[in-house]
Length: 140
Image (cartoon, rainbow, N blue to C red; front, side, top):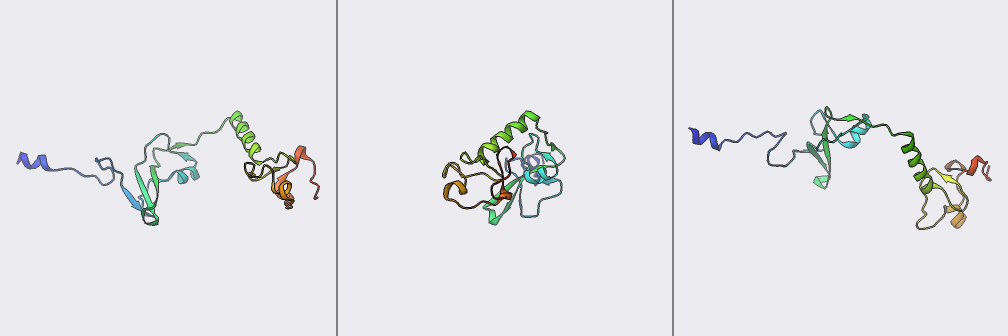
């Protein structure tokens, strides 16, 4: 009887001991699990926890890690210095060096070097940019 007990293995489908994670199909993950994007929508972050499962879609070609919601931590609030650094970085990507307009989207500075209006004369919608130093745009 003791020999038979040694051969028995306790298997938990939600925490397999062989190192593999349980895999769910699209929209079949259990309650209490969420992807990073879903956690972000809830105002949470994984908080250093390892993924506990994965969810697959597109026939297994795409997947996302799933995290436990009860172990997630609140998102951190950036300091004013961090927000200023992020704003400066985005300003560098969205400001035309020729006309100093700051657009609401990133410009193709690596390929064109300027905004489309400066590059080939394509008129830009005045609602898509901010004029330098708060001056009104020439189109208005």
